[in-house]
Structures are given as structure tokens and as C-alpha cells.
Image 1 (spheres, one colour):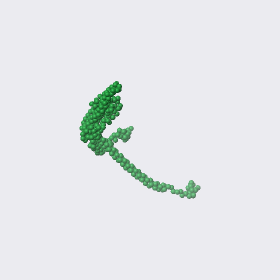
Image 2 (tube, rainbow, N blue to C red):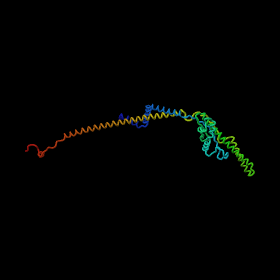
Image 3 (cartoon, rainbow, N blue to C red):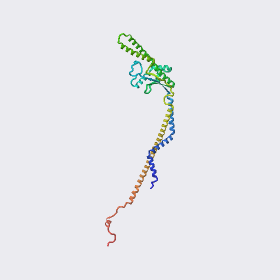
Image 4 (cartoon, rainbow, N blue to C red):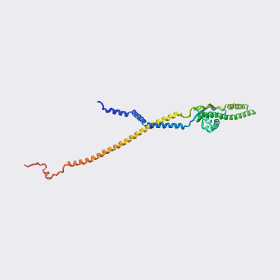
Length: 338
């Protein structure tokens, strides 16, 4: 026995309704229809996003970054030589040591010398705003980074500050070294002229002073042994920040996503509003039909009540009119008696 013709169709429809992939396909087709129906909205949103990206590029200040590098070679913790000089010493933690050195190497004296080298309109305050000294990762390298609107200017500022830093430290160390050398030589002369005392003790003190004198003269001639210029800054080839093509690409993609979302949301809102309106109209029409049916039933019930009463009255048997004589003859045969 073959199943009814309509049953497979009904079963397949039920299976399609219960299939999640079928529901996703329907949603996908609905979204595609929404994009086609509201493609003008998508275009407007994309153009607005692209315009915003162009505005950001136009208002973004152009800045170039150039970096010179300094090598930091701190003295060990147990090194007692060159005490009293502003040299970089190991603090036990490499990160803290390099950060302390970076903080000490950014000051106004260096900025003033760099501003003099750069010339007008550079000032010490402007150099300090344009330059930053920071560690390069977890290494013993310090970066002197300068920012400027032109690439060559950025490199010039970074190099001027790096060279000024070396020169200022050299001048400071020479002044302190000269003062220390003068003091040591005075003490050596005093030891040589001293008549009383232990010769061995005087000899050991004199040897220590002479060794210290040699180290100080080496610093005066060679400069700071803990900070040296490692690399000059080169002229940057591109401005800092994201390139223009990347900004425009990101804003365009964002506009496409936002436009597609707006189109889908608009379409779904329109469908929801239309469905609510249709549901309201259907409910209103159903209420009218129910009201009309109720009124028709009420009218028919009223008319039917009168007719039934009339029929009942017409078919009702008449009241009994029997008399006593009739009651006495009841049951007796009718006819002449014999």
C-alpha cells in the first residue's frame, strides 16, 4: 500500500525545519538579500569610514624617530677603584642598573650643550621634549631616541644629544679627576717628607695612592670607561606610526563590516515590524469575525426561542372537562342493557 501523496512532502518539510544547517542556510540567504536590498546603505557607511581614515591621516602629525646607541659597561660591585666618581656601577640587578643609568643620563646640562650644537631655534627645553633615553630590551644598550617632523632633523638631534652626553661626562670626570689627582699627589708628597712612621705602612699607602693615581690619569685621558658611544643615529626612511595604506585598509574593512551589519539589522527590523503589523491586523480581523459570529448566534437564539414557545402552546393538550356522571359511566359498556 502506497502512502498518501502529501505525506512525503510533509515529512520532508518537517525534516528541513528540524535541520540546523537548513536554518543557517536560510539565515545566510536572508543576509545576502539584505545586503542586496540595502547596498546603498553599505556604500554610504564604507565611504564614511574611508573619509574618517583620510581625516585621521590629514590631522595626524608627521613624526620621524631616530636612535643613537650607547654601550653601558658598569663596574663590578667589589671594584673599589675610582671611588667618588659618577661612574655606572653594578647594583646587583642588571635591569635596575641599566634603568638607573638611563635616568642619570638625561639631564638639562646635556640638553643645553646639544641645543648649542643644533643652533637656533633649539633650546634646552625643546631638546628635552624631543629626546628620550631608554634601555634597549634586556641588554646593556641605551637608546637615545629623538623625534622631529623631518627625518634628518630627528637624526641630527639624536646624534647631537648622544655626543653631548659623552662630552659632558668627559668634562665632568676631568674636573673631578684633576681634583683627585691633586689631592693624591699632595698626600704622596706628605708621605715622602714624613720622618716618623712605619716604613712598611708608608710604603703600602704610597703604593695604593700611586695605583689610584694611574687609574685616574687613565680616566682623564680615555674618558668614561662605563659609558661609550656605540652607534650614531641614521636618517629614518619612514615616518613613525602605521603607514597610510594600512590605515586606509583597516578603515575600509571596518566600514564594510559596519555597513553589512547595518544592512542586516535594518532588514531584520523591517521584517519584525512588518510581522508585528500583520499579526496585529490578523488579530483585529479575527476579533471582528468572532464578534460577528457571536452577534449572529445571539440573534438566532432569540428568534428560535419564540417559535418553540408557540409550537409548545399549540401542541399542548386541552385541560380535562370530565363530570361526575361521566366518571361513573367510565368503564361501563355502552349500549342497551339486557
